[in-house]
Structures are given as C-alpha cells and as structure tokens.
Amino acid sequence: MTETTTGYVPPKVWTPAPSGGAFANINRPVAGPTHEKDLPVGQHPLQLYSLATPNGQKATIMLEELLALGHQGAEYDAWLIRIGDGDQFSSGFVKVNPNSKIPALLDRSGETPIRVFESGSILLYLADKFGALLPKNTAGRTEALNWLFWQMGSAPYLGGGFGHFYAYAPEKWEYPINRFAMEVKRQLDVLDRQLGEHRYVAGEDYTIADIAIWPWYGGLVLGNQYGAAEFLSVQDYKNVVRWAQEIAVRPAVKRGRRVNRVMGPEEEQLAERHSAADLD
Image (cartoon, rainbow, N blue to C red; front, side, top):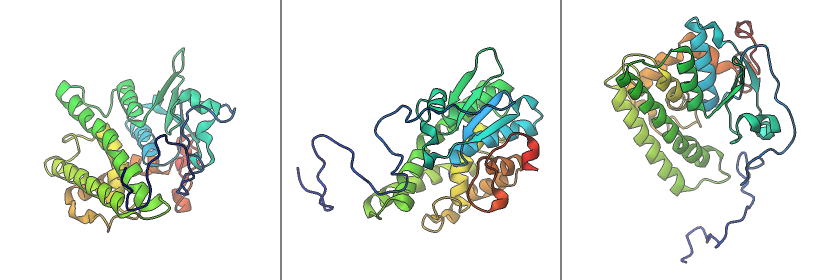
C-alpha cells in the first residue's frame, strides 16, 4: 500500500483511536446503553425526547404546526436530551431509539405505546396520524415523500461530512472540506432549481418536505449552520434564500425552533416544553 501525503496508512484491521474532534467523548463503535436511567413521562400522549439540532427541530416544528392547525391531540411534552453528556445512551432512551440518536418520540395515546425514531419517520407518522401537512392524493403524497427522503439521504453529507470537517474536526484538511463543499453546493443547486419552479419544495403547498429540509438547508443559507454562509456563497441560491426566509417567519417555526434549545440568545431558549404557555 502506498503511503498517503498525510503519512497515514490504514491498518489491516481498524481499532479505535482518539480523534480529538468535537463530540469525540461520546463517539463509540458499539450500540446499546451505557447506564441505567428511565425517561421522564409527562401528561400528554406524545412524549418527545430531543435537542434543538436541525433533526430535533423537525419534530418540534411539526408538532407546533399541527397545533397551529387546531390538532389538539398534538399537544406534547418535550424533554431535553443533552447529547454532549451522553443522555442518548441511557437505558430508557435506547428502548425508544436503539440507534441512540435524537429526536425520539413515544406515542402513548393508544393501549400500547408506539415508539417512533428517525426524524423522517416521525414526520411521516405524525402527518398520517393527524391527516395534515402531507397531500392525500397519490401524486402529491409521492412528491412530498420524494423530497423527504432526499433530505434524509442528503443531509449526512452536509452535517456529518461538510459540517464535521469544516467546523468540528480538530484540524482543517483541504481534501474532505473541498469534497463535501462540492457536494453541498450541488445539493443546494438541486434545491434551488426545484424552488425556482415551485413556492415550496414539493409544490405549491407547505408539507413535511419543507419541515424536514428547512432546518438543514434553510439554516445554512440563513447563516445559522457552521458559519459557512460566505464560504459556500449561499447568496447565489436565490430561490433557496427566498424559501428559507418565508418559512422562518411562520409562527409555528419560530416556536418549534426554541423547544429543547439550550444555546444561543437566552430569549430563544426553552430547555423543556410541557404546555403551549411555556412558549408564550
């Protein structure tokens, strides 16, 4: 094997090594709980366990949008999961999401509680449960789901790829930053072309596709992700910027962004949410 320019040659068998990067203290190559701890349970049928990352915002924005539409059954308790402290590895959390990622939802409205994990699954589950924010006709539903799954497949390149190497890695390496910047800009162009023809991502109606995509790509072009707006020339994606700005002023989006937020301006933080009054 030829030695690379960094001097690193992959061994025949990988073994863990300290990375020194952000979140290195919680990264591990195995699943399962690290400690015994039950999850708290509030008074509402829907129990959300999350943090206001882009993925976490999807769930809270969805719930606030449902409440804004008058679906009182969407009232929920939102409990803070501090991923930097490893809360997602508690025995209680792992029972709700064996993948130990936020957000995780427990629906206790029926005889048997239903666990829902993966943010896209949560959006689809709630849309079907309440019959809202997802077209009922086959063509419209399929188009919205096309873009929902586009986001689920694309965002890891933005977050785990570009965001990690640009903002969180212990050192700046040109190759991965260039590689993932190119892919993120390609994705922005995909989105920009679609939004050049439609008001919202899946058409003329606001759907779970927008709710899924906005915290990631809307946050990026609005300057809320990785401090990379100038680096990526986000102003070039005028249709994405227009769409992102329009969604940002929706009352339910403003409310949802605050839930489980423990960083940034104090007036934008709300560690836990147990009633609508908590946001007022």
